[in-house]
Amino acid sequence: MNSSLIIVPTYNERENLPRIAEKLLSLPTPVDLLVVDGNSPDGTGKLGDELAAKHPQIHILHEKGKNGLGRAYIAGFKWALERQYEYIFEMDSDFQHNPDDIPLLLQAAEQADVVLGSRYVGGVRVMNWPLRRLLLSRSAGKYVEIVTGMPFTDPTGGYKCFRRQALASIDLDAVRSRDYSFQIEMTHRLWRKGFKIVEIPIVFLQRTHGQSKMSGGIINEAFWLVWRLWWQNGLRRTPRDRRPSDKPPA
Image 1 (tube, rainbow, N blue to C red):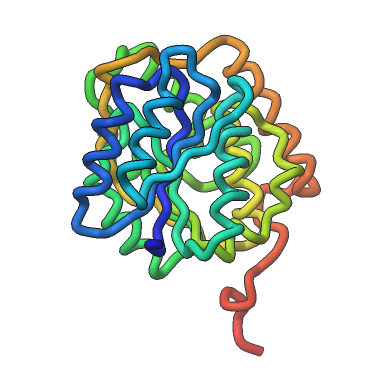
Image 2: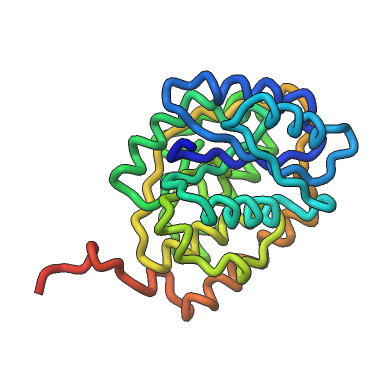
């Protein structure tokens, strides 16, 4: 078993799964892969079983149905924490997240509790997105910052690396978000606990296979979530707690 685990939720990703698995297993930094499949009707789950049978670094969890991105990651996080992984990643299966960036996230995680792969820190690095989608993403990030106070350029991004101790500090059963707002909630829960969170630049590519899962319902969930997070933080726009290493000397 390697010290790093890449969690990849899938739903109808049969075309992408073999490609992303091959790429991850060829990285210079050894990693394990956990596929969390939402009972894909296109046979992604069965293909995941076949890959897991061939490669000891690949594992698969089968959900009974499509329960949302957040539920898939929660299942993956619990699985990872039951084992001895030190670095636990979120990553898409469709190559919008470049697997070659994994060593960069790992390097940053040596000095941080959470690393966010940002599309916007230091400039915009989104390739081939429609202008409307780009404006939606940037507006969402600014909205999250205004309401919650989180000083991150890309709070909705889904390319992340968690240190084990940070992830273990969260009551995963209390995380309510089901879709893309899950990314905001996870980061906010750790930020308000005072964990060290850093952003590093990544290039984000438009998917070449499959379809985006974005919908009006997903946007609506995220819109109201940020106000609930602000309330949970005692109407603060700063972290509630400080980690011991962040406290100034007496």
